[in-house]
Image (spheres, rainbow, N blue to C red):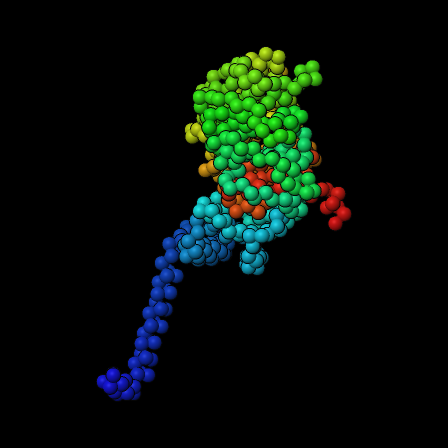
Length: 511
């Protein structure tokens, strides 16, 4: 210690000159480095060495070179900043297209309890895939649309080319797809809720099935409550359907069984055993001579649809398909049944309402090389966009397809437009917004892997995503409207069911 102290005292005298010498040397070295950087930028060289044309104006060429060189330097700095932050190309693209007040708004950090329609832009996702999906699908909420960042999605509409630079319209959210908040939350389920539906022509009867085999029936009136919990399936509930009078529920499951439940008593009145997983199920929608039809159509993993008489449990008819039947829906007449399989094909099937006999009429095969299972098939009797009945399908790789249906040609399907979303890991569903679409636009609502609920307007080729609801913390799998379309229910992978309340148009005008 003594030697070190004496050395410090003895060397203390010449230290300022030595530091001054090193400082000058470092300054010269940094200046040389800066000059080398400024003159070795390849983009700057490309701008300065751009050849001039014979008839070009020298002053114009000089100004243009100056502007191009500044643009190149700015691009280098932005890419350098992008690399330092470790973001992907989509994040960099959003960064360079940010609005002027982005720095001010980015300081607002949203909380997990933020309300839908008033949520922050950079909402952190709790899922491991959240960052990836949010960069593809993310859009600020409707009330922040004036300052929204660009959204990029692939869309093909009426033969238009796919675009990577679609941006949202900078305008306030419209009353048609704005929400006032959450009406109620059901969180008693301990497994992922895979499917949920409101009762037939009902505004307050809600049921949802989970991956633990339970089926829960709830009331979402002013005092929300659980009516019955139906236990019987040993594996995932894949689908269920209400009868037209909402007295019974038929459910399908991966445990190879179909169960018919009486809601009022909360008991299973019939079990139909199969040889493979039962994947989708529908009651026949039309009553004959005032009596409810007993036909029950079930698609399974054995590439077939079986028509049962659910009163007796007997198989009435069977139809074979090319792959597993994963989703289905009836038309309003009961004469047509639309279904999708595990390869992405959509089938139109004729059904005799008296005998239950099925006959395949048309098949729509996707042109995509990668085949993906159909997760949603939903029929609607009228659309302003198609001027007739339409069909909505959604596949697990993120393809939303909108078909017009020719009832006079046995349900022939014509693709009107499609929307390419991010691929899904889970079986995520989508739904029409019938009443909203009669007011304005052609709205579709869908869940997503980034824990948000998204609204799309198919009539806007460049501003397709119009709003999103934030409240879930895990991938949103199920979506359902009530009959009055003032409540929207969504379920997630963690077992949370949120019922959202839509804002009425007259409420918005009075505020």
